[in-house]
Image 1 (cartoon, one colour):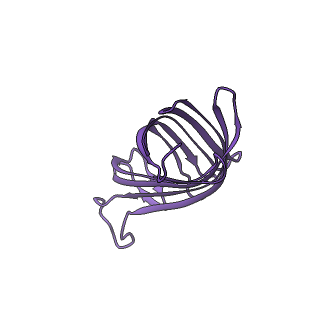
Image 2: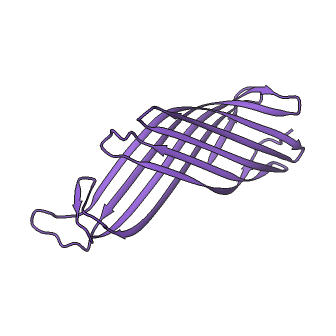
Amino acid sequence: MTFSIPAGKKNSLRFSYFRVQGSGDTVAATDLSLFSVGYTKGDRLYTKYKVQNVKVSWDFLSYTFHNNIRFKTLWEAQATGFNTSVDSPLKPTDSSTVSYYGEGKKWLFYPTLGVGFEQAVSKNFRWELKGSGFGLPKRGALADGEASAVFRLGKAEVLAGYKFFYVKTSPKSEFFFKQVLSGPYIGLRWYFERMK
């Protein structure tokens, strides 16, 4: 989901959010300790995860080339949250262990810098390309990018493209998370005023 408002001539302030979640099950191949809970080889493990990201971006038009290609600098702040859980409900418990449920949660807050390009090929079609990121050596890192084709239909635009998102927490922290998400997408943009 994305919401943007004008912020000066050809600039915009953009707010975006996404969430991905899933679940699965597996059998422990070796003895494990996950989120301070011990599991033994052969235990049936049920897992759930959720990754969500909130981003605020000021898209600043920095230069326009002679063939109407626009170059933008992206000044952003991003918050990314992780929630992962593991359970082994079929494993028998004893008086010292009530549950085999373990959970880890973490939020990362990073400033990100990036660049974007776009070109209006015709009145009703343009392409967009943008990417941003931030990282510290042997610490956390975050990067995202997208490429899209945009078709204009009155007050609406139809988008088709591909997105990429990568994030990892510091390996020195108590819980370490690393996630790569990518894939094609289609979307719809609506303008409250008629585009010129």
